[in-house]
Amino acid sequence: MVDLRGQYSHIKSEVDEAIQSVIDSAAFVKGAKVTEFQHHLEEFLQVKHVIPVGNGTDALQIALMSLGLKPGDEVITPTFTFIATAEVVAVLGLTPVLVDVDPTTFCISVEALKKVISPKTKAIVPVHLFGQNADMEQILSIAKEHHLYVVEDACQSIASRYTFSNGESRPSGCMGDIGCTSFFPSKNLGCYGDGGALFTNDDDLAEKIRCIANHGMKVRYHHDRIGVNSRLDSIQAAVLDVKLPHLMEYTEKRQAAAMYYTRSLQSLKELILPQTGEQSTHVFHQYTLQVTDGRRDQLQAYLKEHDIPSMIYYPIPLHLQKAYQSDRYGEGDFPVAEKLSKTVLSLPMHTELDEEQLNYIVEEIKRFFN
Ligand SMILES: Cc1ncc(COP(=O)(O)O)c(C=O)c1O
Image: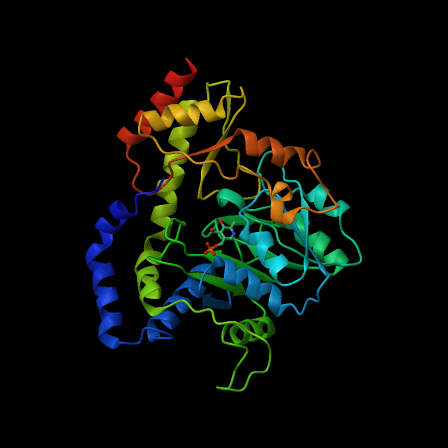
């Protein structure tokens, strides 16, 4: 699905040198490289604070910890996402309230979200799924009306942008109170291990987040709040600092591959191809189509036989996962997510796809249907 070795081959000397310089400095944890990368990302996103942490899941957990929520408080999040989004809510003793997604963007349905707001609701965690932003204009307006926090799960959407109806354009993850991202190797900006970050323009929240990520301390061995240990290590920061200047070029390569898929497959009536919401750009963390004739699994098996990888993100929505069952909902309650889990298929998507590979993939898909 990704070609990290191919991508590395273009930046090998820069990456090797950056890693070597961390080894030479022996500043493996909290080194200068982490601060350098943090500032470069702040500049790139035009956000006041980037707080690097150990991974995207930690980023989401720390974000919720910083909001001072209490057990039983409700956090609304989509049922069609990676487990981490709801997992951190449950881990903190908060109540995940799952809702259905929009059939066009696969992001949280604003109509569904409105219906579940209760006096216990304290936060909304929209997920910018597969690389495009949820309907942030509406979400922020609902949050304002009901005094709710908004924590963006931007783990799949770095470098995508959202334009508000007043013409203002903002980067993904920098619109709500806090944004969270992941630098997992296959992400659009990926390191060579685990990594993540939080974004915020709020000075008080930034201070709390830094404190929580560092065992709840500001002054060494003085623990003002309950925290965790979550750090981006210097070697990962060095890799990310080499890759960040390439991020827009990487994004354009993904978008070009997506356009190729769309152009080549749009005549197949058995497929619904990815659509982008009006106010967002799409950075195609995934190119996810829907197979509408019931043969999704057969297509996947056919592609496998022809050495073409594909993935089902996500085969089971969260409300049907054993660990997340609730009296609130059951099978049939979130028809869009349930249908997507049976029809979606993600095609290879990365920065190294060339025309020959793309052509091979689309020709095999066409052959399957003809
Ligand atoms: C939507 C979403 N949320 C959260 C995460 C968690 O990130 P990580 O794997 O870095 O913990 C991921 C990435 O896997 C993700 O795709």
